Image 1 (cartoon, rainbow, N blue to C red):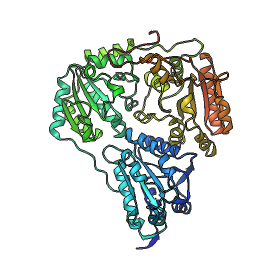
Image 2 (image 1 turned 45 degrees about the vertical axis):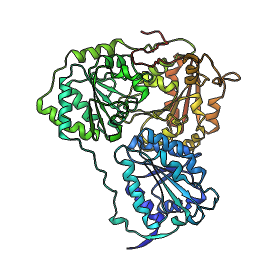
Image 3 (image 1 turned 90 degrees about the vertical axis):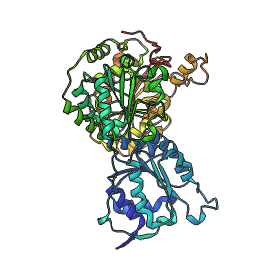
Image 4 (image 1 turned 180 degrees about the vertical axis):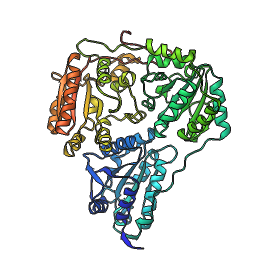
Length: 566
């Protein structure tokens, strides 16, 4: 077997795992890997301006492709800068691989320059964090990292590479090597049968699509089941896009933040919920006593420890969502389809009548009007990313999603600044797609330096900013959450705070500011053409009312509506 540089073997492994793009920043302790990538020449590398940006780019790439995104950094602060991205990926079950350089093995106990125990630091926010001290293990550890990242509940892994280990040679033959198999969790036949019996016995059942439906590529099976048995479908925030929101059986989102009025209403009238790949997060459930009520729950999840974590379901099933739905469909088809009945009609009536108003013509712009324009302007194939804040909640409440993996949100960790690098990752995964980031004025500046990556590598996407010159979500929490204050949340200064259009221009990009709702449509048309013309990021900054609030509450039965209802 031939002897080759160990990092050449690593590059061969990356390629065979389907990696054609990586995001990172070279440094002295990771240069052997960069030398191997340069010599190979078939993996595209984008130089980030901050290692956290690399992790979020890998995250966006992974959410779009379903494969493992890869971020690379050197030793010391490069790895610590990646921790937020690892936590974000872990919280949302996104498979990414972070590769860090490290000081030589003989120096690890001597407080060498930029030598930090990144494995211990990363352990709580990864599925696996490991340091390679034997060169011969390197290809196998990378294979295992990909297997772990993809297996069960997907998630992030980190591999730390001492510089001296990277420089060694090993015996390796890529022609006889391949990815490790990733088995699917199969449900027991008895539990599938029981689930079907419970569904058919219910008078007002709901199917609840969590993020696991999208991660498990199970949207088609979910829709087949819904149509076969005529059962309305809801989605969690992470499951948004699992079912086209214009489908007659779509019954909205339940929650105390990102929710629809008709979603909460139909959930409260239901008597059984089949939850697929959902975590029962607190922003979804609100007050648990109200959420649970008298209804029964079937909880299907690929991760055994998720069953009963928030509350004990009436039936728990450990299985891959796609495999479970295929098994359930087979049994349901044997019994024959069902006709649409009063429950479907009731959910459709709620969907027609319990809406929130969006047709505001006032100045300053009201946020719901922005999403009305977005829904009307962009088609179902557009990819959207959004992070955390009032703008994300408005998006969840008003913006429609039509296809899996086309609406991406960092739902659990909620790191500000996620949108710009995530949009770059999405666009690199789908170069021909239209990519749009919904961003707030505060989040925009957290990783704004990654605009340089979009400009340098000609990565066009559109940012739609809702600018209220506030930390809006925290201002609302201070003002309406019992604190009776507005302390240190106002970021307004001079005329209108930071000149975000000039910030775009400083990075070689372009932007426009909009203050009247009648100008929004034209600005979106301009941004699409400008992104095509320049092949760079473009900003549409919309000045919204400074103290607009989103509907919210502590219980799905007692939401506070701030805007007049239609």
